[in-house]
Length: 223
Image 1 (cartoon, rainbow, N blue to C red):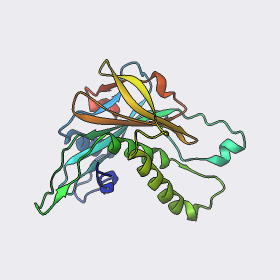
Image 2 (image 1 turned 90 degrees about the vertical axis):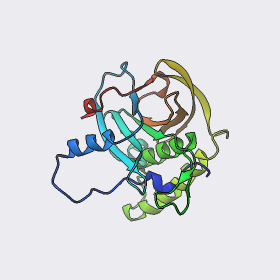
Image 3 (image 1 turned 45 degrees about the vertical axis):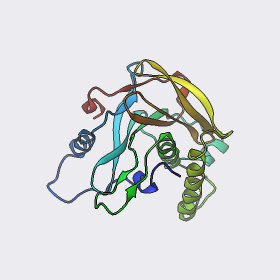
């Protein structure tokens, strides 16, 4: 993919140092970003919560996620097959800095650019992280997740493919086209903003059709 290295999706490990309240540490991570964060707009009145940010090798914040609604738990197909109702409703918004091709921190190579496909892949993998087939032994989940991650990668690299449809949603009040797809696990969408960032989102139990996105005015509101 000519969008972004898969390494960009890896969350940074906690750094050694003075003990800091987790919420404070998380907010500080978001505040280091040189780009605006996006979340659901004011029409959404439910809970909001911080998730995590992703960084480049030089420590620069490149992307991150914000949660809305019920904090998701891992869902498996056994519950659906047995007729159990899955009550959680959530939407996670992923913001990805729109970076052109640029030199690595050590100056020895080039980093791949980010694009809408980057947001689509991060959103697809995010949804997978809360799902696995119920009939599968836990010891096999890593293999399943790797396989599904490859599928999400291929889908994100082919946004014009038949797996995707177009959905227009407001971003900062402006109608904006998004690439959208549904699966048995939930839904995923991705698009770009006029603010120079790419936005991805994924969710379950909450319809994507009525959502709107807006730049976050106060990230601390998510704690």
